[in-house]
Image 1 (cartoon, helix red, strand yellow):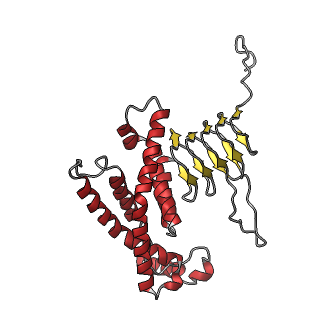
Image 2 (cartoon, rainbow, N blue to C red):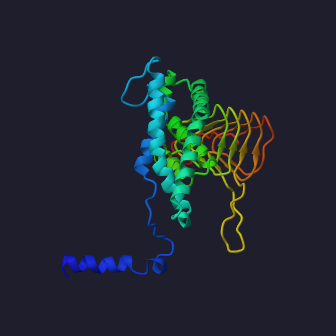
Image 3 (cartoon, rainbow, N blue to C red):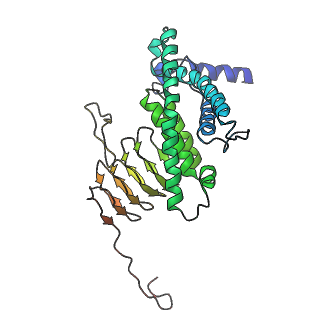
Length: 302
């Protein structure tokens, strides 16, 4: 069989009976949001929220308004196409109603721009929280430039506001971009308060219905997850609150798993490597049993 026959044979196999043979791989006939372009959108947002830290142009107080205005207009134009594509993805039955989709996209994009000052404020509190809790941090610039928590939190706070505005698909893509780059996995629906910090970060998981208060600190490997989930009559998972509520001023040390719709009370400290599936009263201290120290002689007992 020559190459032409091989290609034609596999074209037939991969193209025929798509809906019947591959029911879990739907065929989409419209343009979908672009991961590459969404990366560009996140970078534009980063330039707007942290002027002078990112981008190719230096920024001074005299040029700040100009710089911000140019980037806001750029962001709006970048967003329109991606949000329009996402709305078509979410509601393919509206494919013939282009005018309504476009108008909705414009309204959503303007609404998101109105959220940027709130996002900037929240991120500024996160920078402060990291600085206050990490002696290794030399200055605020180092945190903004280098810390994976800041990349993950910027993406999360952007994705969360987009989700609140009703943008489909894009929030999850933006969250997964940060997950890929940092190892920090935060669902865009999770609610996170002010002055939030993640130290080191690798392996942190924050589930969809998690609620986190103010001045909360997590260390690497912490999971705020679901213990189990309910199923409907057809055996499909039911989307109900199933992740923890973490109140203000809580610290959770490395590799601890907090599972289920439980409440960790204000001011609590949870030590490392804890498995917790019940609520904890405010100002508790949850730690493991102390390690047992044994003496060995000439390798005995090993």
